Image 1: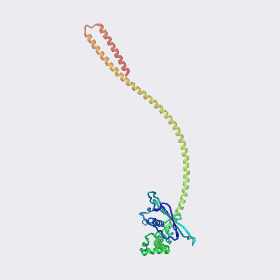
Image 2 (image 1 turned 120 degrees about the horizontal axis):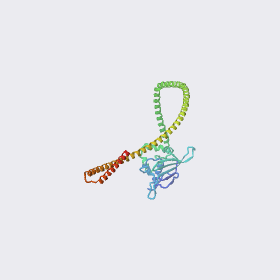
Image 3 (image 1 turned 120 degrees about the vertical axis):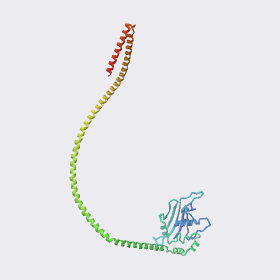
Length: 364
């Protein structure tokens, strides 16, 4: 396998898309401090699946996205593409180009792709297994890691040697096979337990099966009986239907007759309603006449009161005249003329009183 190119976009200081080519036989990237060596190694480690942000010199994974400068805005995505030349398993002896890419968004997380198709981190690890490429592989060593490897535990150095010897894939396969065998043994134990429980339940299941067969036989007999009963019930229902239809015809005829009677009654009711309206009209006229009579009686009562006052006035005048006559009779020096005049006034007063009495009688 050979590293061909590295494309970086929005990763740390790589604000613009850049493509770095790696010549054949390249073994290291050297340069002065601050030239970007660590950014290239971080990009390689990140695209190969590094999950620890501290090893990428950041507090969190989003720190690998270009954070912006005084002249440029921050970016919302970081992407690294790694082009590899690998043996083609379909054609022995030939090679093929494989593009492994990783993309990280600030909000939605990261995604991996192999030749443009989305995949899992495990797929990338399986692809690079036994090739010496990877976040913990021997072919990718950052500055200061040589001393760490030399001072590491024998177990860690052994993993590097096994990776270089190309047996890591087989060890992982053996570990996976052992894990599957262990799972199979556990499944067999569970299967034995299940068989044991089933054997204990076998007698109970046999009894239940016999009961189920008996229930099926009874069910068949019940269904046959139900069919016979339903056949008889159907005949009864047909007869009942015919009776109901006959009753329905009779009811329809009865309804027609009642409808005709209702029409006649409606006519009679309408005539009675008109007569009632006429009677109400007459009653209203009588009520208005009675009201007029009441008003006239009230006026007559008032007039009677007035006539009574006038009669009392006339009586008082007659009493005065009688007193005057008595006074005149008492006087010896009165003349005949005065007596005649007074007699005439008395007759007029009596005539007026008789007229008032006639008016009072007429009013009553």
